Length: 322
Image (cartoon, rainbow, N blue to C red; front, side, top):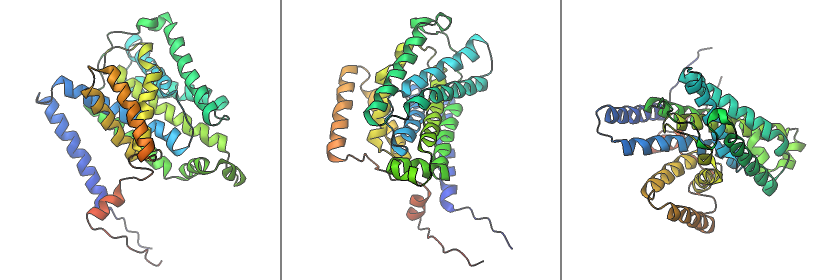
């Protein structure tokens, strides 16, 4: 049997676009044409994309309302800083420690709470997120309420861009796998999924742990870009910010989460001198979205290779007879 390997033109376009974006931004940074203000917003954009995409796995694809994402981000941030700053280990080990610590926290929290549903689950995850923050405030080894200062800046543009793409690719491939179909079936009808033999609790815990793991990764990148972390940074309002991105982009749409994360980051930068107005505007935005487009900007639609193929005139060819 003759095997043929076909690389679609849309895939090559995606690779070229991503390579072009990375090269252009890297050139602007190295040449000094991109000042510190825009670099900070660009870094925040990458971190917010990771947070939004990972929370969308829990809230959007699995259908579980979690309000404790900031707590997992805090676990990852502190774990990475302890490894890299206190114990002077390489940055890659700090990232791995952040992912493992946040994933373990997600497992510990997810096993007892994901048997709950709806508002009860939201309250439980919110409570656990606040418990994590209070625990961090009372550990003197990591600075207590004052946090940790003088963190080296290891989160460069290549790390941020590469890990953002890595997060999106992993979650998209998970959703398109058999595990992802089981996760989506839990969202659509949990009772029917159980009748079909799917262990809904296991799949909810799996999605919760993976989402927490990537939240920890985002926390590690955040800590090693902004020099300082403290428990107050990871309060309920941070979880609310991430939830706004997911709802605005569309529950169950990775593309929508990315677009909403970029939009919210730009909006936050424009209103950074008016923090009170920013929160009011978030609330108004949610109300408007719920009234006029409750499914969010993208609904559950994705913009990927098929979209590029339609733009460039590609047609789906029928399968050849074997």
